[in-house]
Length: 146
Image 1 (cartoon, rainbow, N blue to C red):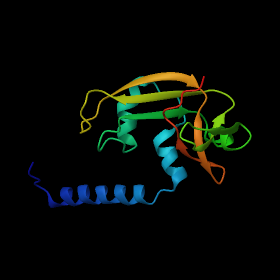
Image 2: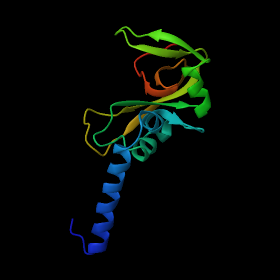
Image 3: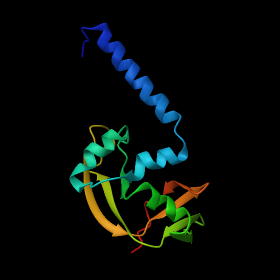
Image 4: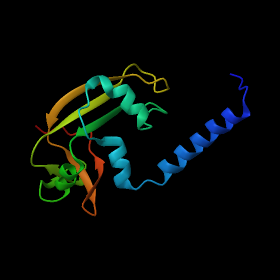
């Protein structure tokens, strides 16, 4: 593809550099929010757009789950709304006392190269998260607790 405008090419380059810089400087909590938090009514049909918007498609992330809740409700799992939980691999985490709505997006097909297409599934379940300084920093995708 040939670019006719050097200004357009420069703008594209600056946009990519900015996005790279922002993602490189995010805290573990900010990364958790970008990858797993959704404040609103997310439908399973929104997987493609949400995965793109959150920079999870280069390469295509195989599976990603979004917790549909208020930030404070998720943070509370690190405190009074959760209890200690040890995974089968021995990781110390927290499990929520109450269930959350979760939308899980799985890539369609075998290719992990863009363009990425996702199939969504919605469920209600307890969430298992890792916390640092009373903030969530990791969502354990593989544990589905009813």
